Image (spheres, rainbow, N blue to C red):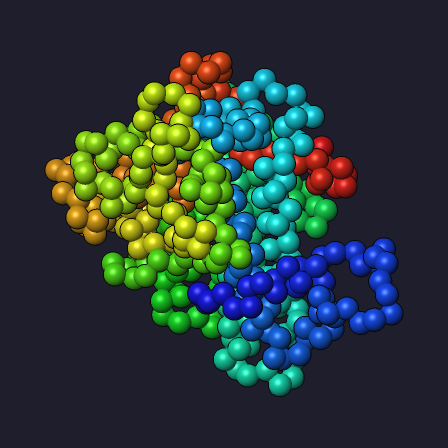
Length: 437
């Protein structure tokens, strides 16, 4: 599951599956930079297709985290940085405050997530279609393909429906109502599918993946189920899943990258280019307790890249092009169980031992308790640093910021934040899908 083979050939695969080749002018000499689609039905090519699904997930995930953590409050577009020049990052950071629709729906950053996200879903579904009735495929490879196609097909649907919206939620709508009423995305030209409806497609895919999964992979799937149910407020279902989720000591389930297929953070908020920076509070967390640096890795940005006298800190959790990104961890699972026990009426525990077990895994001292809303929000803020789930917590706990973050003194910082509580579905979809306005 966690390999990246033939990574430099993936662009070829995507071109074959999703490009319109009929209009290309080609010579009569056979091309050597493309693989004919029917050749991919060979059993020997299925591992290559599995790798393609995994690699596309990594690309989409890193792009989505940059955008969603800008929309939320873990990242800010910091114009104190010399290379912070993307206006689309500023628009998302502002939650599109006072921008016209022609700007909002034309965001290149949002489009840059949206298009590969849907391609990822198609790749996962296509993998399952290709192995149907395919002769000569070993049971081991077939099961890996079944697991991959179903798991990542479920994840892609989660991305599409939970992170996007057709319309803004508004500044006066309670956060949980935003999730229920406004978020959602289409599939194959459909109308908007809400998270509460999309989960009916996601859960069967998770079950199909679970049927061929290892014990570890089954725990990964249950942690995924728990996350989905927690976001939707299905606390009993979330608790049942989390009890069978990732356990202390389990390896994280990650997105993997390479120099050829890099982590988006390297060029958006890392040494490749410093545009999006961690919110100021993360440096404060580390200043208050140096041990927090184990789960909030930061480093000082080079003075030559900062246009003001103040120090700026950049994320250091993804320092390289090939830095992996955690997607699901046992620590998240424990914090979900702690929240469900302490705040959501599940089980008989007060959740404190779970919170402290997560802190101990990073060498951070225990807290005395009790486990309150504030404790859960803060622990999740630190533990899930730059993993793209913060904006769900802002909605679930109804604590969305009221003002725009960013560089002090540069215009709109401190102004009322915009009305978008999910990423807007872009014009590409709106123009071709009559069911999306």
